[in-house]
Image 1 (cartoon, rainbow, N blue to C red):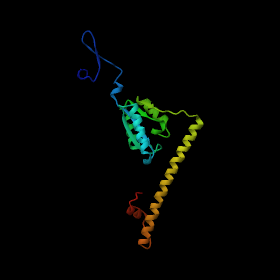
Image 2: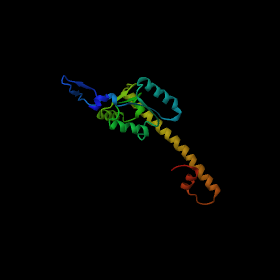
Image 3: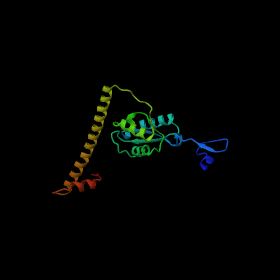
Image 4: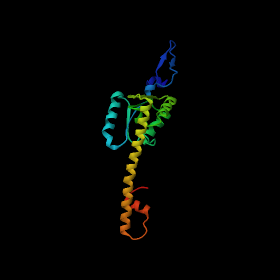
Length: 188
């Protein structure tokens, strides 16, 4: 009765002044809408801002969450928080610009999770590819991911080589590589 008085629940009054409530459950608008924007690297920050602005223009009342991280990485902190909210049905809708903004692979799993939790999954610009085009896109994204990882390992290898060379020039004999890396501030 207090919720009816406070306006939290809508009720219909009968002729005998009895309250009747809707049995369907909570109003879906009482739960927030979450929009998600993601780019792979910090150099794409402008694109991230454009994505977030596009989502805000389509859903002005939505909570827009932006993140920088690989679409192949499922351990993105903000994305995991959204998945937890979907799993617990704390949101009414999950909005993304493209399917690959959420995940590169496993989008059907995300669709299934949203369906089971009663959360609407809204993809604003869903591209329709033929199976061949989809396969090419998948292979290119995998190649891009692993080539970026390879370049990152090369950078890391240069740091290791530099640290070992500095330590060997300082002292003659055995060098503890782990200690060398710690001295340079490189985490292993």
